[in-house]
Amino acid sequence: MAHRMEKGYLTTGELSKRLNVSVRTIRYYDQIGVVEPSRKETGGKRCYSSKDILKLQKILLLKSLNLSLEDSRSILAEQSIDSILAVHKSLLVSEIDQLQSSLKHTQSLLNLLELEETIHWEDLISLVAGPQNEKMWSHYFSPQQQEVLEERLPKLESDSLATKKWINIIKRIELCLDNGIPPSSKEGQLILSDVDILTAETFGDDPKLAAAFWEARKSSQASEDLGLYAINPAVIEFLELADNTKPQR
Image 1 (cartoon, one colour):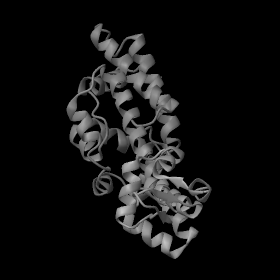
Image 2: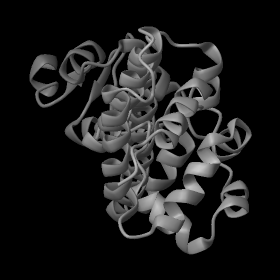
Image 3: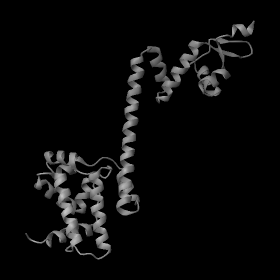
Image 4: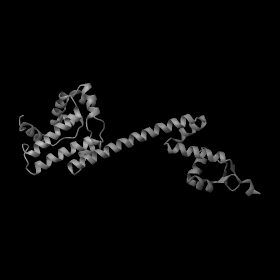
């Protein structure tokens, strides 16, 4: 008779297996009055009805959204699916933002590794320190110029073709420096030509902006102020010498 009365109910152990949640958690929710069983039999046996199970499922769902038990109580009391979905969406957006930020940091480290063949702690620390200082950008560029740079400038955290092209330019110059190939050589002049092409692709028909950005990049202080990758001064000197020795046409 007792067995028939339990039909449709689940014991604590059965509920634990059904929802893949620990017995300890179920008992804790019972103790604090969040999800109590509809029936408590002699001997301490607890039996959960379908409504109890649904309530526990709701609590577990809200818990997965990082909501506190108190907030979960409030939402369940309101019986508002709008509230649940709004909170769920907000948390998903936050998680997406964190993942995108992490992805950018990881790509930046990959690009740094490509450039320097090693990762320095100071690079990593500066990378995750926070967003670039907008006031500093205003110091070097007008609002209109900032908009253009934000849209077109290859970024260290990007795996775009433009970023890869600039990385390869720097690596080619470093190879010339390692092998004693002068800026006036055919290789040096070819690199300079590729830089001119990339500059045109990046800044289009705005040579004034290109010149302003190049002046900022030549300064290690300006690069630091702008939160940009600090180019090896020897690389910059190579390009300047290559430009100075460019054959006149």
